[in-house]
Length: 118
Image (cartoon, rainbow, N blue to C red; front, side, top):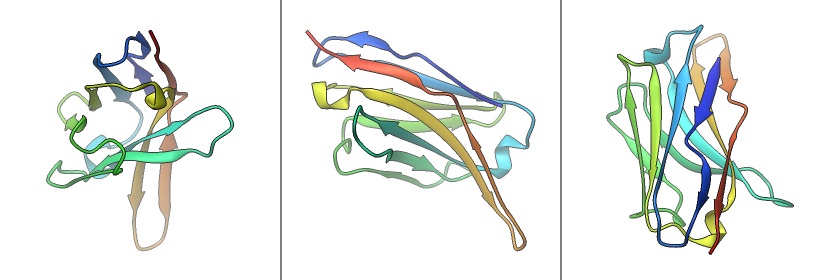
């Protein structure tokens, strides 16, 4: 129900735009996040955005280089990645989360590989 795309191989200093398309749930009710996991490392939060898009947050390592955005009409969340570094190499996952008074709903995508190398 979450499908990422846009990953690939890019040279240091380059840019990529990841997309994550949602289906099967009310996208506009969910906060969305991008996570990444490098080989041998734990999954880490990269960026998040509230359900309305009014608030965003970023990991210190990507501030000023990455931008998260969403289009609720298209059920899509984006991650624009600029000035890419080799240490940005990882599998990138999107996650949707909705917290109600009785339950937490979470969806994960399957991931898309981003490789930054010359």
